[in-house]
Image (tube, rainbow, N blue to C red; front, top):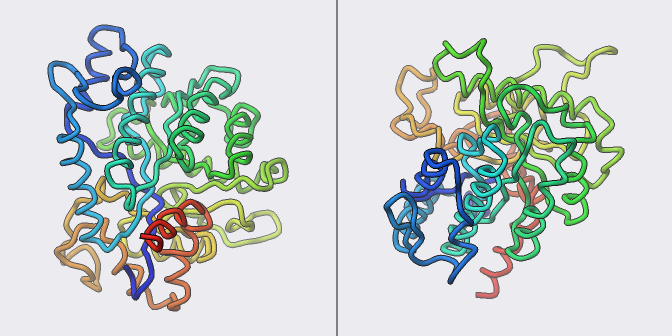
Length: 357
């Protein structure tokens, strides 16, 4: 809670024991993945993966750690989706479909374990060289209609080789159409990077998805996509990837002007986060932390002159936003509660259930 207001986080990733990842490792080794064990038998118990068993107890332990991490950072409810580095759109199609199903099953498992803390978004089997994303619709609809998922992740560059069309183009429209039909948002998050030009750079994965995320943000902001899909909502991870060095002018749009596109706060540098909020505007900024995830580094005295939040992990963002002198109390509430609720109205499900309980 933040001064009596629920803290709603639009950016989280599924947690699970290490045996979860062995499911895809086994597939790479054998060239084959069978049907997700969640979708056969009793649905959860005794899941076998590479010699280990993914038990209900193991998932509960991992999910409890995740929920405890959130509690320690005063996050009440979080939307979770796939872990981006495991979306792996470059893998063979037959493996990708099965891995996608298994990933969505684990996301659903976590939400079932803690229905008052998590909402689910789906991973889709994005194929970069396909004519469009029609192949993704069955998995999308299954998870929304049968499981109550509240949106979907999309990678702007699923195979990591820059083969996908711009995110305003017809390739993406089958998913946009369904999101508008079901009144759920798209959450854009960079994933893989197999660009040989940056293979020598430490953390090239991060470099690649920052570039692709920034391109997606600019393509969408300057396109006519929201004229075609006026009710479509899109939230872009990590503040849109990068910021703009220009000011608004007759030939340059300095920041986004509209109500369909949001940018999260998952930026761990204090000055960068403040500038992102200033550039995109409070109205289009939604609280997101990716906690627990890449923000596990401990803030040190040399990280910022203010020495704010020392000794805490960098994903503990609520105190950073609260200390931003440029924000009014109403601005802070908008960012940590009102705007996430606009992106994901389904947050109200949990509020209603808690009130009824």
